[in-house]
Amino acid sequence: MATIDLTTETFDETVTKDGIVLVDFWADWCRPCKRFAPIFEKSSETKPEIVHAKVDTEAHQELSVKFGVTAIPTLMAFRDGIMVFNQAGALPGPALQQLVEAVEGLDMDEVRAKIAEHESAEH
Image (cartoon, rainbow, N blue to C red; front, top):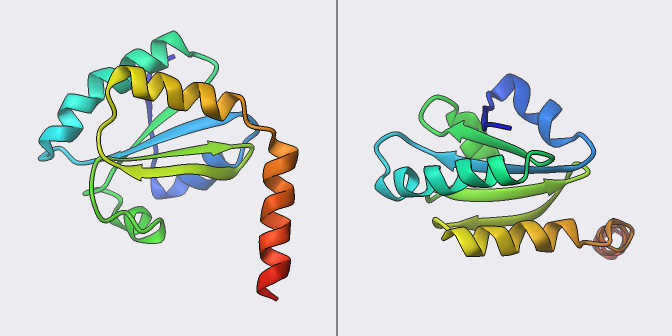
């Protein structure tokens, strides 16, 4: 499955679905983004069951603001609608593969329990 482009209108609908969604925040003028693009594309081909999406930070600045993106590329991973990874910087292929495997291996019941615990501690 090739990468898909996300917009402000399609972002929430895409990342809140069950399963894994990787989101690459990028810009056309960003050299590290251009170096990361083929790595991200290759991952989309080797892991077609995972949604690989891109957000053009120039065209959709409101998404960058909403998610606090201050450097690009920034990669986020969502699983079952929960952000489980957020890091600026281009990853080499093996590191992206490790990230995907780590996200696939998450116990989401445990993740939800930790979120609930954190939220109850704040109130």
